[in-house]
Length: 231
Image (cartoon, rainbow, N blue to C red; front, top):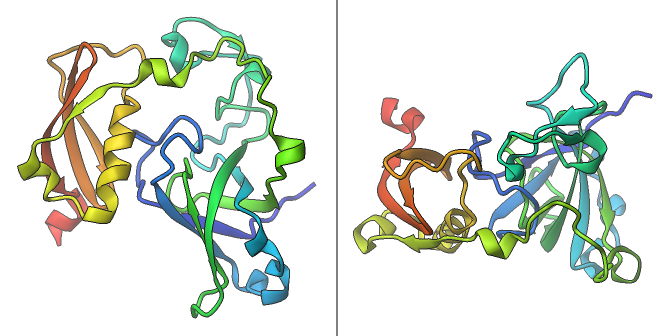
């Protein structure tokens, strides 16, 4: 079966480092679903505005492989313990298909490239191909009693963020809350705990540099991305 992308995501992430590990963890993150010309048909979106959340089915386009492994190393287990691929959300799967739940902020119908879906909380690299969109149904999709298996509680891993005002002022106001929440989620690989290491993360055309000591992340620099510097 051949799957054809219906569009792609436009987000603030140009590299994989720093992208939230799951959708919805940083709800302030803004993104747009842009559709291929043949799917820019208003009738296809009729009634969509009545739903608050959507499921996005997409492709791990940067993680394609010719073969697959029955076990993977989940980052949240330190990268040293193997688990079954079907017990994880690893991008390295028999079929590189991802699933994300996002909040639908609005449907823009009158754009030259419209309809465009404005969404919040996406965990996708800029340019990720989108295969399909389905409405989230609370009565069917919400299971508060569900067990989380070996995946640790997200809130237990959050960091305090020290963001000096002179650096925070370099970030567009509409991006600051998303960036701060993103950093609080600890973008580092779980196996990297060196307090002297300086990390660099691309976000919204900026390069954010930070270090982490114990449970505190300190922003060290906010610079223009390398591409902008060359320009």
